[in-house]
Image (spheres, rainbow, N blue to C red):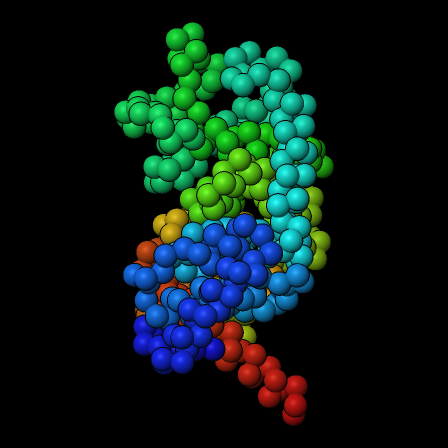
Length: 396
């Protein structure tokens, strides 16, 4: 691993440019080619290295997913358009490891998703919910109206050529579709929030055993945001279908956290909260004993953290950076427990000196008191220390 610096040895710099040129000439698909051909003249040296190293891993007939995860864990750069969305699709197992099959995968999945739309979405604007699962639609629509209200992107028009007063769209976003006037229906402007609603409604229809549950909207919002904001030119038509299937894959891993019937299973929310509890106990017994002394149940703060992977506790750019690490964790979401420990350790002074109310408030406010880069660094240090001590204990 290279140091976090903008300085680059001349040989490494030369290697970056030569490698990007080679990737351009040997690209397995147009997506890789676009990323290799972009203008990186104004990009820092260290960033160029990160771009080159990831593209080298991606431009293969059979990608080594673990190598991609190692690079992704340390954070993806913003300067290579399409890189993050591509890597996320790969580590969420939407893209196959054979790069040459990516375009075919997107085309096949787009057709499949369009069939779902025709089956489950009978009208573009549901006025009377005829043909809809009424309760499901109302649940989704209610939650979408308050999804990431701090991010203006979600109430922006999907059609970038549309010119409209943002305050009008903001006001419109608070109405149920059935409450729209005839004029509003006829001149309705579709926003990214409408896409979220459509994906979640289709997911709920196709997965009645899992059901749509509040909170899934927040998880989807992060995935869709990345795919839409980091889309490679020419791939715009795939954004919605790519987001749907990637979200569906992710929910296979998270669904038990949203299912009360699975609470007591090995994959349920209680087991995941127990993992966080054990990490705190093992690494900061002094803080855990204070929790016990003050009758503080970690569920007060940890259940929301766990269900939503902290996506409501940080600004969207910070959530995206955090998810680079969470999604690429070799043992998916194991690192998350150490991120939670990091948030606790971040306010250890307040925990050591406070009572019940002061401790709980400090922990709940901890995300506001730490930069994401510092939190990830702290979590890594805690994980490495714990792993080292575990190894020592195993050897004795």
